[in-house]
Figure: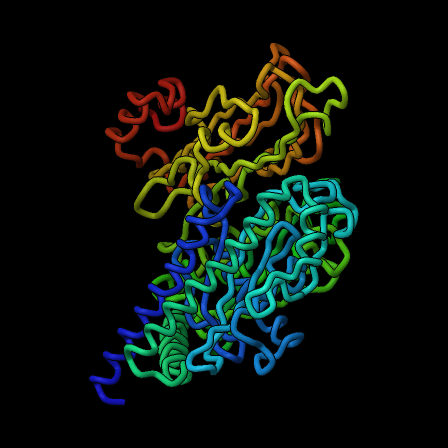
Length: 552
């Protein structure tokens, strides 16, 4: 390939990324669920006919993108590409064939040019309700957690599968939103297919094979070159404790470089839970790969080839390798700790490229109210809503952590006004939490304080799915821990609620959440006194804590 051809391939690659970004933005513009249109809890990408991901949208979460990358192969096993027709759309929410729990819908759509199938578009989105016990850890098997959709055709040559939609509508507490989201996901893929054909017409491309080869060869070579810079012949070990459900959970990892691959062994990790905090293996691989890639090869585009050198060895019987039908509804509570675990290993190899631990797992309280909680005494209409929020991220080598920002999921914090507009709830308080950031030469990010009530001060329920309450984020290289999370009521007694599980907030009371802060990095005594003074002036650090932690 000469220089001009390489330039043209690079232009086409960039164009492909623009195509999938428009695919994702179409979903955001048309989605019914606030989880998609406000938080961006989604993924979108294009695949070749061998189910290999060529490009992903910048918009989206690594848990979705990297596990969706595996899911398209499962679709092709049931519905081979040769039998697909224009206007077909295929769907599933199978946690082991999709992205890890029933609340994620994955849709795959073929793209045709001049009557010939040329590629596949796929997307995933988190929807508000899929029936069952709802979003929460209480289920004891996946069958209790909601409506289970195998890989089926939801549109046949442009015509909706009415039997499928009948089941969907009667199986959810939010049927309008659910049906609307499915149409949105299909429209999103259609938008991508349309733009792809326009691109192929413009460049007179008969297929994607040549471009795919260029993308994969370039990505793999670049990733392997970065891996080659790491130390060899060593094993880097780390562990993290999660609050768990019945008992604390320990995640252990041993990382090594073998040739041009990075191998991670999870031997020693805690066993399976009886509740929905278990992690399907694809979701484990998704966040493990993301954590490694953030450190080792952050500038290389995310695709099948750039992820292929990262290999996970996940022993059977561990919480990171849950088999069907174990409950997995809130697999993110454990799974989103994995990038911190990967950085714990890599801190021993490239200490100047890792972050301290952060709050990591989202604090996204599912709220429910009305007759389904209070029966005939209900003072508000039935509602089911989830709102996405986060504590602080860990400190970086040269910068402080971020305040109230979702890492590693990357979803946006949902505006309180958007939630209040679709459910009878009121956010009485949402502000940064002073003294929650772990101290250090660079400090962690601050958590949040949230106070939530129902209208008319009615009772309502929270299906708590929180972590980092008993096990706060650790600092690195002498940095301090971030503040623990806390879950309770706003009463004078400071009534404590469990960090996981379905609980009722009584009439007249509010749910109070103190979100964790991120860990610090480096000796706090080396922090610039001007930065400490700034945080004190902003009310983020109390004078007493500034003196105790920083000597300022």
